[in-house]
Length: 613
Image 1 (cartoon, rainbow, N blue to C red):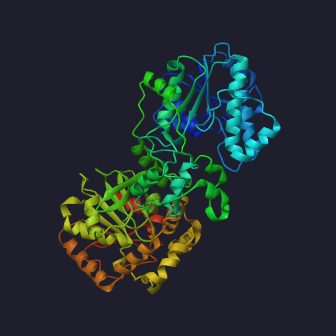
Image 2: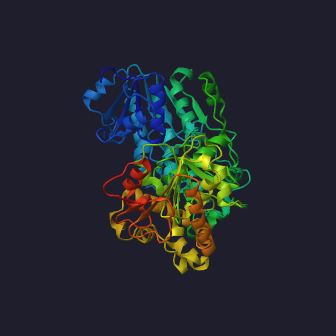
Image 3: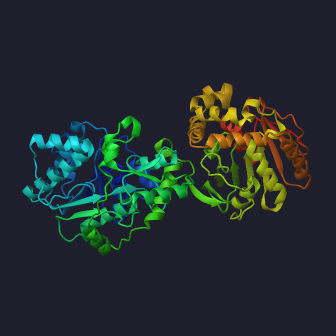
């Protein structure tokens, strides 16, 4: 460490903490972050990925649950003797906690940080983060009698109970020690206002997940239920500005956007954005409490947040104004957050190309990547979605636009034809990309290239189904195919799609198939997939595409066909170039992505056999 830190952050690797560190560094502060495992800590890498230098960052080992010394070594404690501002963003945020587990961090750990901060001779401010549902008592008491604690934790649950007790503890002990304290009470913190990025997937995010998956038949609460939000970047900037712009310690700041729509309106906003149905029926929280949890699926701890209460943001607004901060438009932030939640599969997988929902020819279409100047346009087959290009994208050194076909994957249906949809999707594109289409997507891709040869640099059709053996009769019958697709687990789908290669499938391929399986379980997606399969495999449709293929090669659209050795072409490819990928089946972009990347780059490789003109 070349310079002594002037700022210390606890909880620096958490959702709130790392963004707070980023904006403290942005303000020129010299920041020390206390983490349990400095050697395995990912904070520096995350900061650099977000364009922030770590030159003024110091990472130290410690543990706020270990006592008033917060686990710092004697040497590190001395190196922090000049710290002026301490930020405690550490908390254990989870429902279903045991009382002792929650108290260890949210109460005892918070008091330990306070007692340690009080030993800093130059301390200017301790900034402690609680939550918008606590801190309302103007005369907090600590410690509470055991009987009151039992009642508190029984009524509120371990998480909220510990936050209420911890808030009181910090305020009481700070007054006793004369420690300059500021308490910040954030509402539900959502993703970054521009990118939607968030790595916290509980609370309100779970409600969005249920909405997306069609598991939210009713709206809990009333028409006036208010679950306020704040974007994480605004919150972190507010935190970083407190030492300079909050004139006196002792402040209690509620940081939230009072323009957040009431919960039913918020759910309608997000449903419209995501292209799913919004629940219309309201059910009072009091009734939900009386019904069995197994029936409602509601976590009792979350119900305490569903109220009509409003909060006074006057003091926080004054600090924000002094710091020159303006809240980002809340409805836009909510939409971008929802985009990122879906892209990250609500925490189960990080997006390779984070995307979002756009109106495309009447469909709320999920689109990722470069919408205006891509080198490639990647279109998935059935029953996959755009995530099926994960293995290829991991090795592709070029810009790409990836979209889920209308009505399939994450995209909503449309009355338009697939060709009309693709034409609208590519309308903003200013380059001449190569369209890469797998299986069923070969049909709209081929029709687009034939209709707009001047708009494409080439066409790469992977496993063009209309030149291969037709799908089995079972999968050409929606009545039979729909339940099979809907019930397919990720493991079964992996085995079905990859065959003998499923045991050695890469993690990227498995993640892609997990995404497809998750989408097929959403309402009506399996049925629409089965309907698309039936339409695509009609003899007249196959014959029309074979004829169009010959016409397209005749008008000099550069065309390349790729098939796996185990799923060969049986139809006439005309004048198109053909590549056979050894040992591959119908999904070579999943099983042999490096071969596909090589073909896309135009470089022949030894593992690929080339034929055709």
